[in-house]
Amino acid sequence: MSTDSRTAETWLVLRSQTGDREALDQLLRGIQDDLARYIASLMSQSPDAPDALQEVLLKMVRKIGTLREPALFRPWAFRIASREAFAKLRAEKEWHRLIDPDADTASISDGKNDDSIRDGIDVPRLIDKLSLASRTVVALHYMEGLTHSEIATTLGLSVGTVKSRLAYGLTQLRKTAM
Image (cartoon, rainbow, N blue to C red; front, side, top):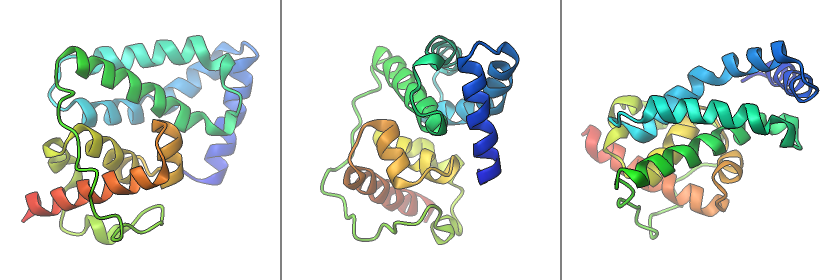
């Protein structure tokens, strides 16, 4: 997302927090597709994904006034989406697959997007084969363009844990793609 787009989004958040319904509607329309894609990537074939999206949007409407840093709207929205998706998955008893905490973090760059990772790999198609923890980080980084620190903030994790989960997920994607 460009700096101009983030600035415009920040202004929409501020207007929404003052009760401007039109700004809130525009803000939600602007992020709804990204959230839907993210939730679908986490919940893969779950029939509850559309319900999770609706719950996320409702929570955002109710809690927009509590967002202290309007510039952090996207990480805030993805955190709400993550929590809602995880809650739905726990209810479905899919929350049992976790990653190997000893995954190699040395191979992870600190850049926002590393296009060499995507070369020859159809990430959206293969992401369903990852554990939920890895799927979450891979989706936020490669599909939504969040940095490691933004992902850490979104999920309430350390940057090292984000890198570890990303390394593990990418290793699994490479194995699956071959």
